[in-house]
Image (cartoon, rainbow, N blue to C red; front, side, top):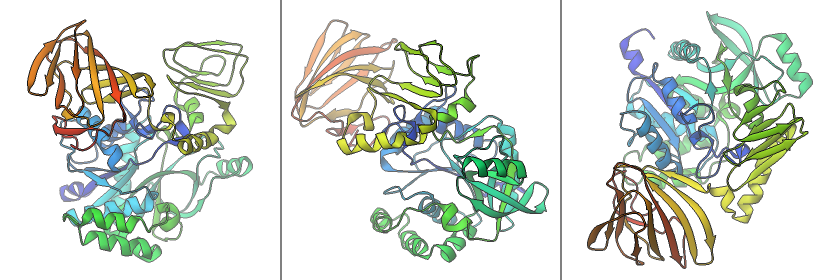
Length: 482
């Protein structure tokens, strides 16, 4: 960028509302792919924020997501940085693909800074070379300041059929070319042709443009969306904003920004890059991310493999034995297992669709759910009862809350529990228990130095997580839902 003012006009917009259905059973509705740790300790969205930090000024990163995911994302980002994220969420009332998400972010940022340059990033990519990534973004940002809509193109190293392609045209300047064609996901023969021709790049889904530029393009190529964005813009910051967004989004057809704008526009530039990129679109991607052994297998977890090759095995602590498998994917979690040929990895979403139709818990959440204060694991469920193991970190505490439809019985296994039960407060130690009647205000906190572990038995006519009223919460969660 040319000067300090231009640098301060840079904003990151991270799109984080996806469900990651092709990464089931690890990805669930309440814990989608971007909230998971696939490689290393950081989750994918934490890695995205860390990676962008050398380029984006503090406070200039915004997250586009939905109300359901905001709480978990906010918790993860607070754990990553000391920055305040509370006012940097741009909420979609419902998912409508990337064009409405980008448009919504553009009107927010243009309202904040008329000269805003948006770096639009998916939240679930893996990039091995962060330095090359940052250099490509700075070149793209400078190009965007000149009125171009810029896409980051990834240099292909194999005839991949799971990505879209972009063809490079004339050279605009060093490291920047005119994009002259967007190609849909090709078959194997066409992908090999693209690789051989050397002027095709994978469409990474990472874009850079001025907010004003993309809004002008949306007005030209997607007038219905633009009309809706104008209606939303008039309500920004008012009590009517949520109502306006819901009204507009309910009438929109899902559409990607690639198809809706970029494939039609002429001022599109491409910045080619080779940065060790993967979009982690399906389980098949792991063989390009994780190391492979001498049998060409990817192994993660407690796997015993005999005479198996060219396969992906991703499991947890439970022992999983595989014999004689070739070109297979096996994924095992506490409550669900996936087994399929590698060439059917894209079809995992069909299983998710069936689970969703059934209203199955395995579509929604895992047995173990992480919270800002610790975690809980569902051990057993039945008619009118649920048994959980709850862990609370030292110094942490749950919200002051009540449940209308269930009572709870707590048995302390380890640590010391500070219990608020109605108008009483007392400590409970290992082998001691306490009973929380229905509709009683209560709180659980760990006042000790070791992790608090309790067994909770719930009893009642309704045992779902949304039966909760919060009166005070140190994590600033909503009072009406968990």
